[in-house]
Structure formats: C-alpha cells, structure tokens
Length: 357
Image 1 (cartoon, one colour):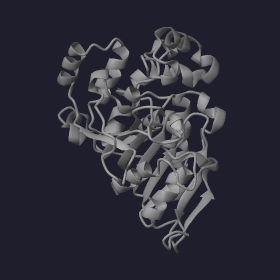
Image 2 (image 1 turned 135 degrees about the vertical axis):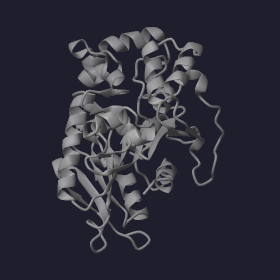
Image 3 (image 1 turned 90 degrees about the vertical axis):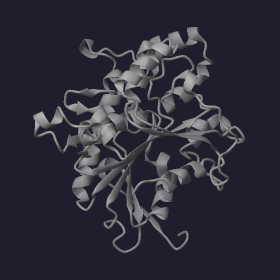
C-alpha cells in the first residue's frame, strides 16, 4: 500500500495480467481500459511497474491490462499474426468488462507495431454506413470511430521502430556500417523469423508491399490509418542515444535532418526527458515536397515517414546519458528493470501526467 492506495492484480484473458485499484468496486468502476503491450521476447511483467504507477495515480479512472497473447517466442511469429492475437485478447477482455467506455494503448518496441496492427483490425467508423457522405467528409469527421466499440483516447509507443530496422543506424549496435546492415537484412529471419522479415521490410507475401508499408494506409478491411487517426492523442517516446536495439530516427518518426538538438533536461520532475515537440498533421502535398527536398536514401523509409506524418504526433525524446545503466536504455525507458530507485520512473510519470482521460 502506498499513499493509502492499494493496487491489486489478477490473471485474466489468455494469461494476461489485470491491474486495478483494490478499493471496493475498484475492479469494475474504472471505465478506461489501458492495454499495455510488451516488446520482442517479452512478458506481462515488463510493464508491471508502469501498470502499478498508473493505477496508483488514477485508481478510479483506469483498468490496466498487460497483454499475454504474444509472450516469449510467440513474438517471432510476425507483426500481423501477433496483431490478430492481441485483437482477440482485447475483444475477450471487453466482453468480461461491460462497463468499459474508453481505450488506450501503451506499447514498447515491436509491441508498438503490433498495437498499430491491432487497432486497424478493431477500428469501426461511425460513418461507414453512408458511402456518399464519406467522400465529402473532413479529416476530423473521417477520424470518428471506435476501437472494439470503445472511444479511442491515447496511443503511446515507447522505443518502437515505426520506420522498420533496415535503414542506416536504425539498429545502433550495427554501428551504422552499411555492410553490416545489409548482411543483417539478409539473415535476420534466421534469428527473429517472420517478425525479423517485417522489421527489415523483407516480406513480400503474395507479391504485396512489405507489411509496414501497408500499415501506413487503410488496407482493405484493415483500417490502419483511420484507426490511428481516431485516437485523441498519438505519442512517441524515443531514446536519443544508448538504445542499441531501436534507433532514434525510427522510434520518433523523423528524417535525419529533423532530429532536434536536445538539452540536458527540460524539467526537474522529468530529468531524463530532453526534448518535446507537438507535430501537426502534414497533408499529401506537404509530404511530397518534403520527399523531393530531403536527401533520404531509402525511398521506402521516406514513404513511411510521409504517410505516418499525416496525423498529429506528440514526440517526447529521452536520454539516459547520465545513468549508470545507460547502455540498457531500451529496457530502462519502460522501467523493465526495477530497483529501489527505478531509472526511467520519470518517463512513466510523464505519461501519467499527460494522459488524456
């Protein structure tokens, strides 16, 4: 018990972990479902610290579910397969909790891509019945919709490779050496199987474009961008350095020439947050002009940036350069490794303080 509040947890759908307030009716009164999604080879415990912090701060508001349908080696099955599993898990959970009205996602690493796939599967437009109306709808009207029947609120990714992992310095432990990066693209499937192909944009199922490319547009019944647009907020938390798994550029959805100069710290309350930016949506014409002006060598990566930039993003840049555990930045940013003085706790607190209820 902390500050007079007690956090309870119990196993639920597919072995997932539900975290909620232990107060009387605490497990049923919150109407805001927060789905936390772990990264590759992860488990429900990866988000344990953050889940507890959210419930302690917002005991009567949120019901947190740490997903379990893609744990351990199941994370190697591919972003689409994992996305389908997570969608089923969310639907089953909502059936058990009929009082839920809102939904948010907080996802780490490849879990962010899985969550993007999942919302594309679960999105339903409130205006789809009249196709004539759709043709004249404004972006704001098109964005109206639900995720699994709930109101979409916050979509938050943490160190997620939105642009994939094949570009220069997108996987920092390869040191930006082109030869290493090319070899990695050819052998990654031997280690990370189908998920590796998706991350390096090496998949070509039935001659289709790579999955990550398809996920920046609505694709048949999978309304990826409509779903992403439907959330009140979209946020990226990115490591500016010392993340040897996911590079800064791919996790913050920026081009090289858009990476900002960051300060030591912006706020004493959040010592590891070094830069914040609110990016407005960039329409097609703006995106096309940027493509021509930018010296981006990877056309596919440029397409991912351009299309993902068509919705507004809040971008929060994080640095653990003063931490003794800085070389584990990829895990610290979600406080996967807990201690008495948990590194990265300020990042979680920043999420809570800015969380839209």
